[in-house]
Amino acid sequence: MRNRLLPVRVLLFLLLLLLVLWPAPAGAHVVAPGADLRIAQTIAGAELTMTVRGVSRTPAPAVVEIEAFHPVPDLRVELTLRSSENGRASRAAVRLAAGRAGPYRVSMQVFRAGPHELEVRTPAERSVLPVRVLVPATSPWELVIHGGFYVAGILVVGGLLTGGTSRRGPALAVRAGALAGVVALTVAVVSPQLPEPVPDGAAPVADPSGSGAGRPYASGTGRPYVMAAFSTQPARPAAGAEFTLVADLVDGSTGRPVDDLTLHHEALAHLVVTSADGAYFRHLHPVRLGPGRLAVRLRADRPGRYLAHAELERTDSGGQLITGTFDVTGTATAGPQEAGTGPAPVLAPARPVAGRPTTMRLRTAGSLQPWLGMPGHLIVRDRDGGFLGHVHATPTRTPELTFTFSFPAPGTYFAWIQYARNSTIETVPFTVTVGTESDT
Image (cartoon, rainbow, N blue to C red; front, side, top):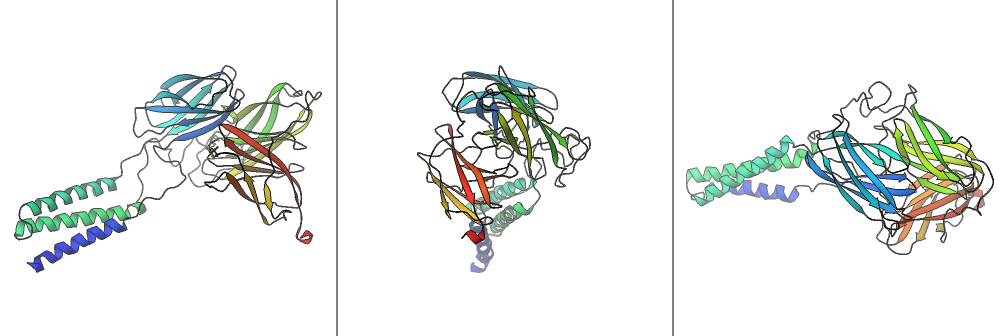
């Protein structure tokens, strides 16, 4: 009797051991099928974050949420989600109430997976954002795992109910069930190393339309750098008057419009506009007017030279910083433009040294609200505008923001810390003087 039970006990022990050792799935900050998609836009004088909730199948309803950051204007926003493959579209509209951040929720219909365009329209502006709807695909290994457990359960339970291991037939059933369970768990353990199924709606490995350059770029091979030209409409903006800053992006190899920007930190592009003296600061997220063309509306109260730095990333390529300048004419219409208010952070060391890490700590009032996927942002610019740095705060459960930054060279730097609280984006400007090793 004991000899007959030994193989079954061994198999059941292995089954239990694999259950204990089965690794839990690890979380990662990646764009995954069925995941939410967040997009920041500066449009019609409002800073908006739009969240398209993920779907697990198509056709299906998709919830779109809009959160506005103060100051919030009274604004009607029309949304259109259109398939790029067959043109089928779903539309919705929402009115933002002045002073109310939201979130505002609307329901839209997703008819199929694949590439789409999300059109965001206001009475004054329009943006067309490329998005891709990904739907999880069933892995063949999941069928093996689930099927194995199902068969194992039936055989083991059936064998035990019909006589345990005292008779040959039920004993074989129990052993076969345990073996099926071991096989299923073995596949489950090694499945993370097996090829993942391609999600429904995923882009092909080489996408002729993805580069915007008239030829395919294979996934993972990298793409030429973006060349950019900044311009203003009108060409000579006047102090106190609204104007549009335009960035035209072209492929560094072919010169054709670049239309393969990928979302990074919840935006197609992060645009920082500063005055030469650092008194004016704006962190914006331009609208997409069309292939290779981004734009944002601005107003500057003082004449002078202004600098534009835009962070962006092409699909299957690394991040890139593009720069430009423009001039504002006329006469100042107000006093000095303040980039923000608040106490300056505490620096360690108090006098930073070029090439060495500097820790900056800022205690905020109240709980922090994630903005652009991060608890806080530090943007640093040197005096002449040739250098711009952007790092993020270390995640923490306290209202204190902590940044680590290494200044590349000695000199004076303009810096701004930004964070969100109560649906308001706070900006804290400060100036840092960086020394050399000999100064310590």
